[in-house]
Amino acid sequence: MVFSSFSQQLNPRKKKIRQQIENDPYYRFQSLEEIAIAAELGIKIDVTQATIDDLLRLPGISIHQARNLVELIQTGVEILSIEDMSAALNIHLSRLQPLKPILTFSYYDPESLVNPKKININTANLETLQQIPTISKELIQKIISDRQEKGNYKNLVDLQKRLQLNATIISDLMHYIIF
Image (cartoon, rainbow, N blue to C red):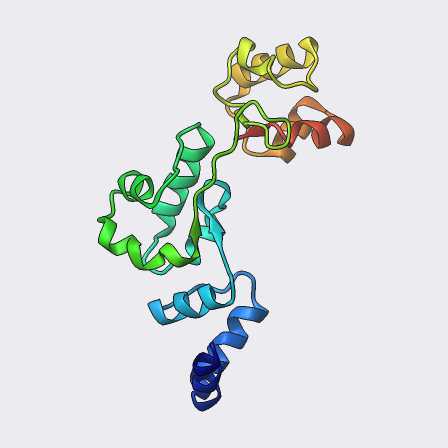
């Protein structure tokens, strides 16, 4: 560790990169050297909880790959290792291995109230929507009828406007639904 600190004093470029990474929580890593610096700083990305923006921080991950991985995870596919991530992204493991120092893979119980599984409101049937603890039977019927008549919901704002829902209902639903 002493040598590491000493080498940073001698290398102003590395020191500048380190400061950029420390000061910007959305910093997009450009190289494996930056991944190593991030690992030294204790930065971790939990792949199972990652957003598209989190995954785009990783060098070599495209927006298409990030979207696909997030969608897979949201549909219940478990990504519990770098090998799972490699298979899901159709990327050779050797390309992901250098990113391993900042990647974590955690298991979250789908039945947990701490981290509930989100339901796609555009594809969910009556039984699936009934799993949402804060939703009434009347609202479920409105959601399904409106969706059949006018098509999929784009986002929370679209849902709120189309069904004329108050802010409290949207605040409750947003923890349980995706689009």
